[in-house]
Amino acid sequence: MSSSRALKSGLLITLILFVIAATSGEAGSIPNTLFTYQGELKDDGDPVEAASARLLFRLWDRDTGGNQIGPEWEAHPVEIVEGLFTVQVDFGEGAFTDELRWLEIGVDPLGGTEYHWFTTRQMMTAAPLATYALNALHGGDTHWTLNGTTLY
Image (cartoon, rainbow, N blue to C red; front, side, top):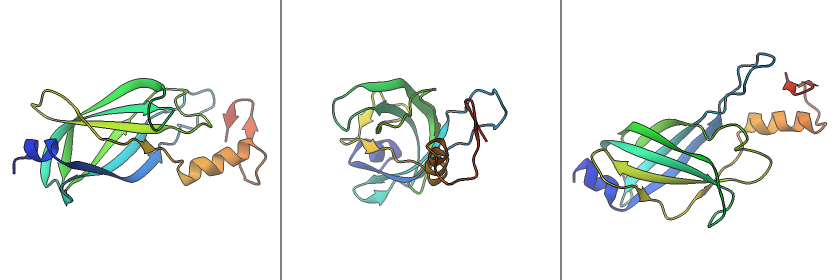
């Protein structure tokens, strides 16, 4: 089965890891809003062996319907090896707050003409260190210090 056909039919994506990239830590610097998304593409339950594709990411405030948060983020070309891929995604400052968010993903094999959207959105979950840092903002017992708007 060709890579393009494998990507077009019966794809299943599995979130493997979600990590929010750390900010630069410099006082007064603009926060880095990039995060790393690692996933797995499967065709009828089997990992897509080797392919290259475009991925389009959208952030939403609901699991169905709702409002899109921030801009769409396109990653291409994305190399898929043994079903696995890694991309950097950025929805911009203010996209992530203390409210739930869902990720919608579309795949377009290179040379394709349209995105194939996965039928369900994935709920975004916090990375452990982000949760730990959030506790510092709300009086948790941590070693973080908040000075104005700078956390260190």
